[in-house]
Image 1 (spheres, rainbow, N blue to C red):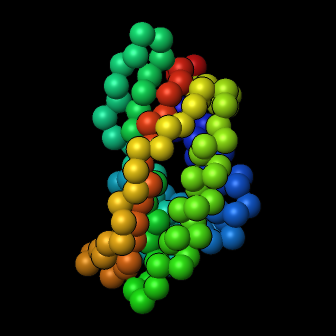
Image 2 (tube, rainbow, N blue to C red):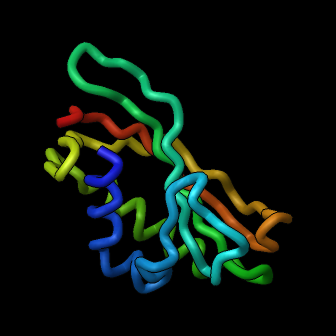
Length: 128
C-alpha cells in the first residue's frame, strides 16, 4: 500500500511541478538537509476495519522560508489528486478511497530551516 500510494503521487504532474520525484521521501529516510522544496510521506497508526485497513497518511511539504506559495500550490494539487482516488490498484495493495482529515496550517521547521505544512488523509483499502 505504501508503494501504491507513492507511485500514484509521483505520477501527478501538478505535484512534480512543485517537488521533483528525487525530493520525495518516506518518514525516516530524510538524510541531512534536502534541497528545497521537498515532500515527506508519513504513515501513522493503522486502524483495523472489518475488511482491509484504514491508515492515516500525513503528506508534509517543506520549502525555503519566506513564502508559502509553493506549499499552498502543492497542497491544492495533492488534495485534488487524493480526492480523486477510487479503487486504485497497485503493486502492494488496493486503495478504495482517501478521505481528507485536515491540514496543518503554516508552520516552521527549525531542523530543516523551512516553512512547511501538511495535509492529513484517512487511506482505506486492502493490502495485497
